Structures are given as C-alpha cells and as structure tokens.
Length: 159
Image (cartoon, rainbow, N blue to C red):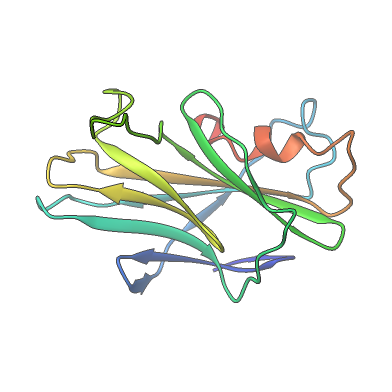
C-alpha cells in the first residue's frame, strides 16, 4: 500500500478493496524539482460486459475547500490539499458527455469521475480496455510557484 502525507492510497474495483503494486517514478526532476513523492499504480482488469468502477482513493481523507479538478489533454486529474501539502491523482481519459448523452470523445471506451477522496474509471458494457493507470504525485511545501508540478508528476502518460 502506498503511504502519502494525506493518507494511505486504496484501490477498489466496485466496492471491493484490492491489492495493487506501485512503481516509484523518477526522471522528471528538471520539470518537477520540488516533488516529494511520485508513483504509478497500474491495474489490469478484464472487462466482462457489465458496468464497473476502478477507484483510487485516499483513505479517511476529509475534503478541503482548496481541492480542485485540474484537467488537461487526455488527462483527468484531481488535487487534494492538507496543510502545506498538495497531492494530485491523475488518470488517462477525456471525461464528459454532450447534452444528447453521447460521449465527448471517441478516443476512450470508458469514462472518468471525480470523488471527494479520489478519482475513478467508469467501465461500461462496451469497454474493452484492460489497463488502467493512476499517477500520484505530491509536494510537501506547496507554493503558488511550484503548485503545477504535481499536475505534471501525476500525468499517467509519464508512468
């Protein structure tokens, strides 16, 4: 289990807590010199034609008014704050639907969703994707100048 300053990271498939392996990431020191921790969690999941969720959550996290969604191209990311620490959890995707119910993009066969204590992938009946990544990065002494570094650090394209 990954321990962070905001709490332990838990991964669930639907409502079931699962074990996972975590990889410590390096190599972005030039772009993210103030990052305290940077990790990737990859979940292999074989879709079964039914709706499911794969969630990455901060155990016992109490949401803050400072918490925010920070998206990018093919990046869905939420940042969490506690004291002087900022932690971001990223996932690959393009969340959103048009008013008629069609997906905003056809690049992905799943959707993404934000929660008070984490993020999750939404798998539907047509999903064929089998690998789901969560990028996690935090800074212990966050400032206005280094705040964006967790956004780069938690981008799953760098996992």
